[in-house]
Amino acid sequence: MAGSARWMPVAATAAVAAMLTGAAAVTVERAGCDDPGTWVFSAEGPQLVGGCLDSEDLPVVPPPAEPGPAQPAPLGD
Image (tube, rainbow, N blue to C red; front, top):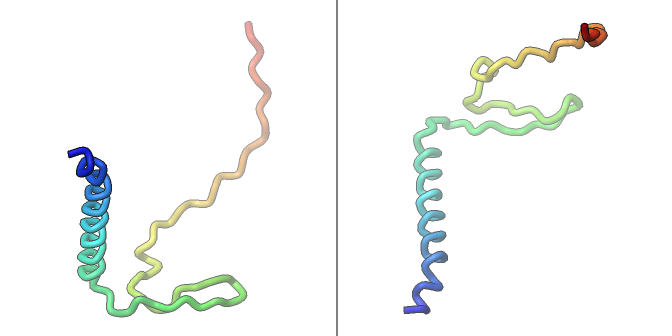
């Protein structure tokens, strides 16, 4: 009985890994993209050419606001 308890965490870890692998395979199959795209390295840096991702699909992050002039701390009454 003590020997089987030692292998229980290993078996549980292997089962979880198998389930995650299966979930990843199903996700890739259902992605519906026939062209995975190609990475091209240029002077501007790496760029993804082709693929199913369009620039309109990505969220736009506003640029960070510039800090204003420092305000002095209010004096206590």
